Amino acid sequence: SAFRSRVRLAAERHGGIVDKFVGDGAFLVFGIPDPRDDDAKRAIACAKTILANLADWNGTRLKAGDDEIVVGIGVHEGEAFIGAVGDDTRLEFTALGETVIVANRLVQATKQLEVALIVSAHTLGTAREDLAQWRDLGAAELSGPTEPLHIFCYPLLDLLGGPAHCPPAR
Image (cartoon, helix red, strand yellow):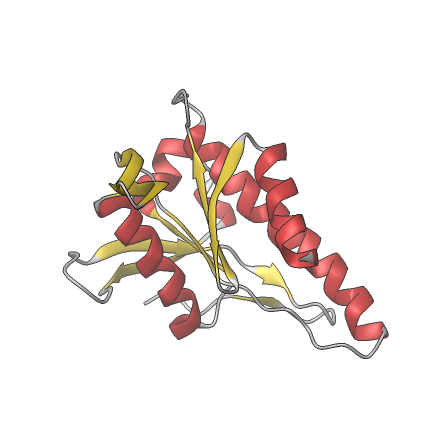
């Protein structure tokens, strides 16, 4: 619940909502109920906030002898179906579509590449992010039916003061 609280507060701070928590993961959505021109920028800022808050929390956890919490965040923007889905016995509010599938694939890619944050090039362009702050990973073959996608990771300083970690460009 401490992790979920941190994620929820970061989402609220940047104008997003938690669509749902699934196991140890969270699905955040921006632009609901009213899409804004800066939805992608706010989603990326939220991801960075979660990682910064997690780094602080992990520092405290490590000093107390607790295990470090490691996350992988994938950010992708685009159109999605958003609304109530289900039948008369179970109805649920959610987002569906290719955009959601790609974001989920980016989360999976963080595990394979051992990085904390991956964002699609499309989303970085929409957010007008400074690409000098990001490491270009090139076109990635994501699992499932999606086409190769140009992705970037955000290098972060290691909690113990080591160099920024992000795999080398392909």
